Image (cartoon, rainbow, N blue to C red; front, side, top):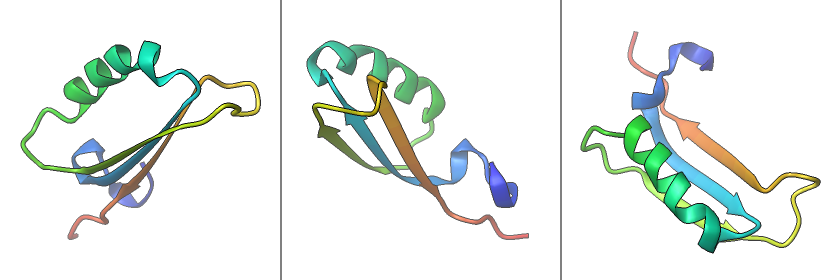
Length: 67
């Protein structure tokens, strides 16, 4: 990631789902593998009905680590 950030620096996640019910299990599997440490990130999941041809979108906000 930019600025020397890693997945451990993620502090906020927003996911957009066109079919959250069928996508939830796969999303949780990936989230639990990537964010396995006990850093409690804010996570907002939003159901949408259109994503310009995509089924799923994710936005993350990392903190910039100390140098």
